[in-house]
Image 1 (tube, protein in one colour):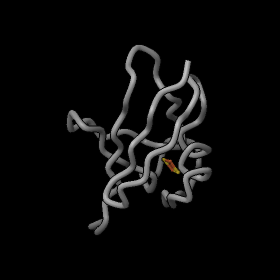
Image 2: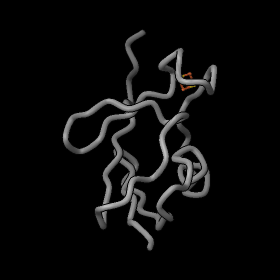
Image 3: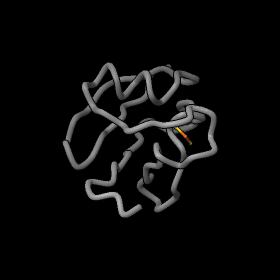
Length: 79
Ligand code: FES
């Protein structure tokens, strides 16, 4: 089952499969999510979901149970 992933602020939409790594999906979409450790500890890859949850892209896979997912990249990181 594929899920429509909507990346903000670039306003790019791609289809992804449940369980696919979020970084791979972003890569395919041509969206650059900054990364560091790739192990879930540095938070460089933090992005925000439409409900305000902050997730770490490097340890996140596309979840089942919804048809669309909006992912908001921080355009101006403050660390
Ligand atoms: S790249 Fe370090 S937490 Fe994701």
